[in-house]
Image 1 (cartoon, protein in one colour):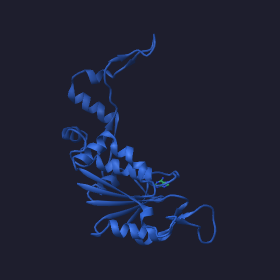
Image 2: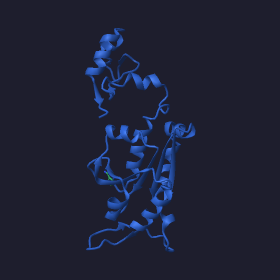
Image 3: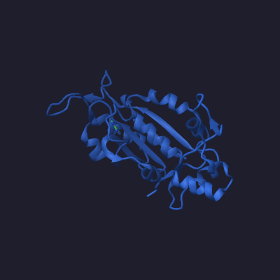
Image 4: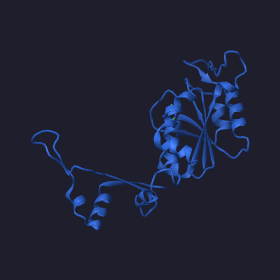
Length: 223
Ligand code: ADE
């Protein structure tokens, strides 16, 4: 079982996601656990303020270090978790990183919001900064869902049949993602238009089919 702890000011954003079929099943079968923590719980003022103006000026607000420090301290009681801060400046998330993270027992995600997060969170609290791509989102909640889903798929049992995954592991240990078709063999969206399935897939020649899958696929490498 891998445990994900998400520190966010929008825990509600995760509710429908966690109710979705495969993730919901993974939680129910105890392959994964997702704990949501509202950052405002660790504020001390009446307004539950989590942000403040940046020193040196600048537009927008910055998430304060104190509530994040207290949240992580409480969530990471046994001090064994990997602590990830989402930021567009972070190391780019990919399948290789997912394989590595899938070996952890507990991962804590700190979801940034507003114009940024006090840099001391990256310097002193997080083990790594992660970006899911070179674009600027409104916060780390979607990145957390992307990373949780990618890692969860790698946990044995989460995706239905085990052979299904094994069949798609390449010789080097990467994951083979290839083009696929299902019935009908010939689809006629309009008169005169015929969209056909490649003949080799209907041939029954498993060697040829395998070659075709490899030449029409992409291996997402493990390392
Ligand atoms: N926060 C805002 N944009 C982000 C991104 N692309 N990746 C991770 N965290 C982010």
